[in-house]
Image (cartoon, one colour):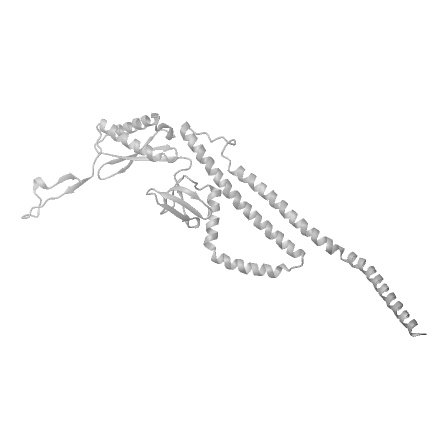
Length: 344
């Protein structure tokens, strides 16, 4: 065999080998695809399903939150109808407007917070499921997140308490914008209610910023109804039956006044003798009023009571003191100077 024949045979053998290798690879490739088809198609499909499912759950949850919040914050009775009271038209109109503003504010805040919570919870669960699908172990991540969360929790306890207290204040409708409240040192009108802070404007115009987590108790003078209370002091010589009659007539006349009648929910009632003081007998008069109108009703009732008692000849006693005068040459008081009463 010549050298040329040997070279040709080698070339043919190499070509045959390469052709066989390519044929083997062509046969093996479909087998690999067939063996890994579940992984190549299943993982992306499950990831897509998780993402779509999370979006659907979030949308349904937000829709449910919106409906529940609107249902809870509806006024009593039929939708849009105020509760029946015996208040005047002007007072009803003002109460409707304030109640509508408070409901809107509470609905926006509560809905926003609950939607954010749902978004975070659904998002965290979806991320965990996605990481599990791509083969990342969740155990070490959860352990690390737990340690970090514990550290943040210890450092932000007061902040968490403020937000939780703010949520409870709004859910329970403890007070709202425009209410007159007593929060301890801060006494005045509420100007803003947030999840972390409450702002109160006091009588002198100062604006108080109170953290919700620090509010231990609340006195609200603006919910449902208020009470005007007036204590009247009369002399011991006065006839109490006459005093009661004068006070009742004065209260009934005030109820008939078109300026103050709509602010009064009932006729004033004379409760009777409140105390026996050193200077006179204290008689108490009280009447239920529209919230925030008790002070104006009390001032007008006090003015009319003074005029009515003067007209009836009933003495309103003034504070008195006993003064003993001693002479320099004798420790015993003079008979005509032993006791003198002087107004202070």
